[in-house]
Image (cartoon, rainbow, N blue to C red; front, side, top):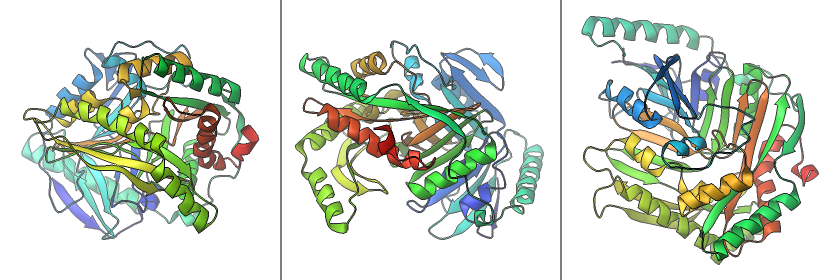
Length: 466
């Protein structure tokens, strides 16, 4: 492994030098977390769609999680504790429809966006940033070469190539931002207000019938993206991270397919066999004045409905994590803590565990997928109801985005506040957890609060769509 520290460049500026390259990705913590990463040119590409897995363009048998686990097991790599934790491995997204590979579930009829269920690259070189200390490193592993001389030569060549492109990095203030109104042909949702409220009531009816305790119902907004291009997409992402900062940003560029995400919610983190998840349930808008903002935060903290919703998901995630955790190690160090973001307040809990001997981060991902905070409880029945009422695939939304390191580290987030693009089509979802005392009109209004920042990208006032 070759490691070279370079003069610090702001991560978003550095990524501008690579944004036009397919399979270049930016894991962006913005200013709310410590580490960000850029990866370019994977030596393997793994995709899956409807259970069909392709590795480097060739069909391979097996479950997508198992294929990824087998692939990662070929490239075990020790890392340096004094560097940012991700130093090479898998980066990409795990879409919501991967749930069909873990459970028997009905399929949605509408797959308008037609994204892969999973898209992951295996990366030997990482540009790693410590934003707290304002330091930046190039980490070049030399993989997939195995022999000493060949591996060293590849590591040197890759490092030199990335340094060459980094010289082209410029502050993005030197370039025009995304246009205020990108050329998008009319937004449509799979629900109008009446339809969404009717579906919320159906969820409530299922709850009273004893089918479920909670389900996460979303509406999808979609549009044709007439001036779709990689610079346009990255410009949109830059605006998104400015409008709605969050600790789990990502710009994933797969060529035709791109994912622009700015999520507040961690799904699964694994470090030294320690597992952590931080489910979000409970939302209020930010107030227009400090006093009204504090009142809304207090209202959320005291809401029996929102706390109940959160605690139900904590119980579900405790059960999921226990499948891969050592006995008596699953704990909940935080319940319903308040976290505040650009346009909303959230209630956030923390669940932890210690990974069983012989289990890997991919085992944990598979055991907990998809995250309970965006399905409901019990999980399988909630997902059946979600498909019945939404009847459209979710794609990357409510799946997971992040990295899995060669050394067994992992950090993934729940893909909410996520815009998906595929060959001139774009879509995003907004939703919320429905419980017995949910109010259908208020639930619809909550989806518009969550959609407001996304529509701000396009110069649209969400009230125009209400």
